[in-house]
Length: 330
Image (cartoon, rainbow, N blue to C red; front, top):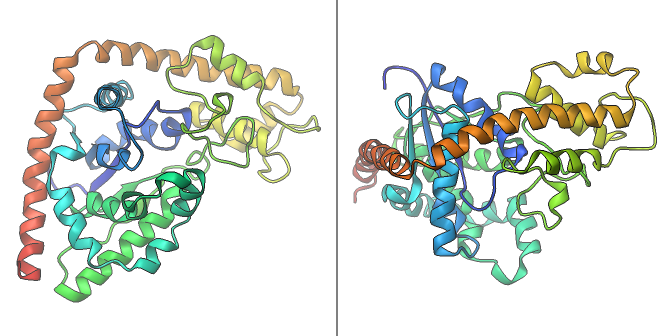
C-alpha cells in the first residue's frame, strides 16, 4: 500500500446509521483515500455487547458496507473488512487485556453512561470494549485513527496501553494519533435535546435523522427541532444549543464556515432557517440513498469485497501478532 501513513476507522453494524455518523466520520472517508492507506472495519464484534438477532446482524453488515460504498469508499483504494473475519483481533485483545488495569476501564465515561441505560446487560464485553478497540487499531500499526469527538477518551487509553506495552517489551507498536477532520462536525447533537449526542439507540426517533429516512421524514424532524426563545441565528452551544446544532449540520454538508453562515442568516427567521437546513440535508441524503440502494442490490459483489478485504487484513494482522508473540515469549 506504499509509504503513506495508515489510518484506521470503524463503524458498528448495530442499527441504522445516522446523520451524526455520516458527518462525524463517514463523509471524510472518501477524501482520506487520497492521503492515507485506509483500513475500514465493520465492527461486528463490538456490536454484540448488546443482544443481536442473527439474521438482522448479517443484514446490517451488508447495509453498512453498501453505505460505505455510497459514501465514496472504493475497494481498490482502501481495505474494507469485517472485524470478526480476522481472528487476530481477538488474539491481540487478550494480550492487551493483560496490560490494562481495571481502574482505567472504570474511568471510561461511555461505560458509565451505557451501563446506566441498560442495567440488565452490563457485561464484560461492554466493560472491556475500549481494549478491543485498541486491538483493532494497533493490529494494523495505525498512525492515525478517525473518530468522533466522543471517542477521544478511548483513544487516550489506547495510547497509554501502547506506551505500556512498548516499555515492557520494546518498541513493537506504533502509538496512534487522533484524527478529527473538523472539530465542529465531529459531534452532531439530538434534534429535540441538543445538549446530548445524536444516537441511533435513542428511544425517541424524532431526535435522530437516519441516513435512510424519507425526505418527508427529514423535513418533519428538522422543522420540529428544538431551538430557543430568541430570534437571532448565531453559534453558541450553551445559550443556543439547538440553533448551533443546525448550523453545524448546514456547515458540515455545504463546506460553508459557521461565521459565514451567521452573516448569511442574519435576518432569517428560525422557521425559514430550519427549512433551509432540511433542504440541504434532504438533497445530500437523497443522493446518498440512490447510491446505497444501487450497491445494496449487488449482494455477491458486497460479499466479494469483504472476502478480499479480510484476506489482506489477515496478512497484515498476522505480521503484528507474530512480532508481539515473539517479543512476549509465546
